[in-house]
Length: 348
View (cartoon, rainbow, N blue to C red):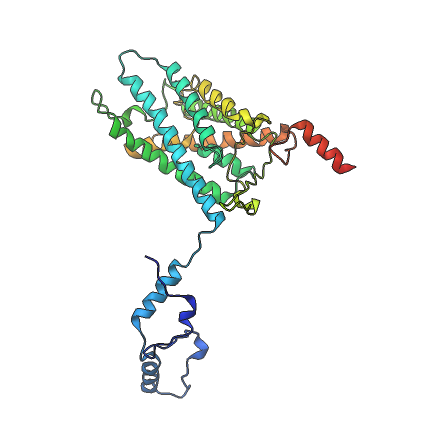
């Protein structure tokens, strides 16, 4: 319900039963020598005739008086898109593992690797222009510390990623029955396996995350504008300030650049990483993948390891790739040749 009570109504009160109230301390008209009884009488006269209904309307108006600007709208869509992307990725990855356990012929690692690879490629292409399709807090954190994503947007992304992971874990109960006294969540909890110790698991997670995020940065950022100023076109055809969408996305799927093939490179990397680490740390390289099942099942064994190792691995990968990277081209639609030509023309 939208109130029709306007801002000017609070300073132009026509109702004779209402008075305007000013709460500034210097307007309190009480003489220093007044007695307490005089003060009470003054106060009564000041508040006499106040319309309580109008005061409630004023408070309601001030609390709800915020405008959904274009910049906020784009950010909101990006955060919600990241939540949906993460939910789908987590659900598919965990559902493949459960389905494999329930089937009579176990396909094992091969099926999991293929599913993860295909899923990530499809989701990156689907959500690249919405949120960037991080679906991994380690990826988001790496973009934050390297300046590719603001800390405000990064924290919103990580929050929605964790919420989506929990939602995807709970959704497993809706689609899978209990199997041999094991709930669906029992089959997707990530933990140390194969007699691995903490050091083994830590360095395994660090290494896997380093590989993943180095590939992401090398393919998605090497020849694109890292400020990522997305142009917002309104229905009437006008183009808004390009800074509105800045730093909301990672992947530029323009075929004229190496970044156009980033979803394939990232997807294949996620696929072959599934062949590594599963027998040591569980092969998570994604804190959100660990968080959802841990929260739902209440099993938090060595949970901290997946955050610290993955964040450190991602940070190291981000700064290492930045050291090797070429200078970013300011227009993601440019090729190296056209960029050089433009620079030469400008120099002349």
